[in-house]
Amino acid sequence: MNESLSIIVPAYNEADCIESSLGEILRFARSYGQSVDVVVVDDGSTDKTADLVEASRSRLLPQDPPVTLIRQGTNRGKGAAVHTGFKHARGEIVLFTDADLSAPMSEALHLIRPIEEGACDVAIGSRAVDPSMIGTPQSRLRRGSGRLFNRMVRWITRLDLGDTQCGFKAFRRTAIAPIFALQRVERFAFDVELLYLAAKFGLRVVELPVRWNHVHDSRVSLIRDGSRMLRDLCRIRLNDWRGAYQVNGRD
Image 1 (tube, helix red, strand yellow):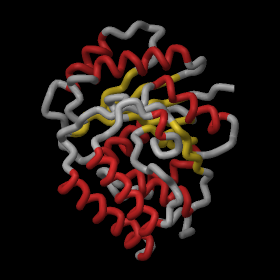
Image 2 (cartoon, helix red, strand yellow):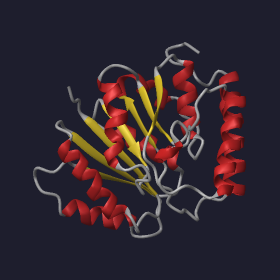
Image 3 (cartoon, one colour):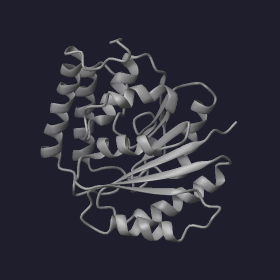
Image 4 (cartoon, rainbow, N blue to C red):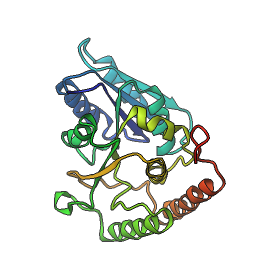
């Protein structure tokens, strides 16, 4: 049986795609069969992302799912945007997706259904489980750097997951809320932190293949952002060692 659903969209300078992506998200929401709310978090965009979201909201019909726009005045990072969106989400199941919909919304039910059925608490989309589902691949350099990063994730965090970075994940609210409250990492490695904490506190995580197409993003620098991600991986383990991750006195 369907449960209420929230869809979080972290957005930073997504003016080229945000209107079409919202259209696809709303089409999915109308077909879901239960209440849905959409939360777009503008992460300090310097383009017209927020204005375009407002324009889309003005065209909503009374029967359409509500769309909330949260503006973060400065660019804090994708992790901070998802965290903000989670605080405003209403659904018992919460899904976040990259604004460019690299994984199309038609794949959302693959993540939502196992949570509805009680099979897991966290369902993550993966490009590693079935690479044949990748339509437009990343460049060879990015694929290589992704494999290297995954090896570092496995070595530093001991997470046995093939793809922690796909921007398509769903959670059961009651299970993940204490984890979000502990979140410290605000940028790209926030996915790893959430999954590390989910494993630490015994949540059931499944990694599922999804269709995916690479969308070029010149804002991501392999050198700059790669060094940040490595630093954040070390921060996660250091935070744990220092006792920063505790829920009701448990660590």
